Length: 264
Image (tube, rainbow, N blue to C red; front, side):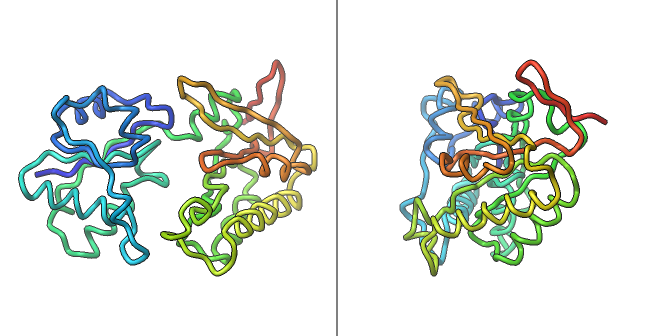
């Protein structure tokens, strides 16, 4: 049987293919927030659950979801792993393929990946077209990334002059220290990395470059949008949460009427 890894979009605006896969599934596995947003698209008798309580530092939640999905698929169920946003961008597709390949699971040959709208696309539409000339996307506090790797990625993105969207402003260890242990307080890691991000961009871009902090885009309960010049971006960071994204436009941009857009 096929294991389907799909994205439900940052605001749960699912594609036709995703809606069809959800309607056909016997088992849906994923974060409870994502499952609740699409439960109405699944069959009433479909199983919907997460496996967070089974995760350990040795087998993270992504690995457990993948393992359980493969086991249920091998038993004959139509299984869907539900990811927020797009599964191929900080979603479940990469981890699922990695863990199936690492364990030699034959389910790897039958994985199907279905795309979903990503947060950066919602950000672009909310602000106007700030990434019209191109965009780079960073994950600031991904648990597996070293300080050197993060610094190198920030430096490259800043030098590119492209518009930038930054995910994971907060370290996973702030919410789940038992699953993502760190040698120093996770909150300190998050703040230090954002400060590095701001300073690196300040070395390449004017201090008055507009930056934005957004959260909840596409959600029925509404969203937040805050702005500040690059020099004051740390003020935005202090207001960020686990789902916040921060961005700034490409180096060539215009703005007016409350919107901002890149020029090409």
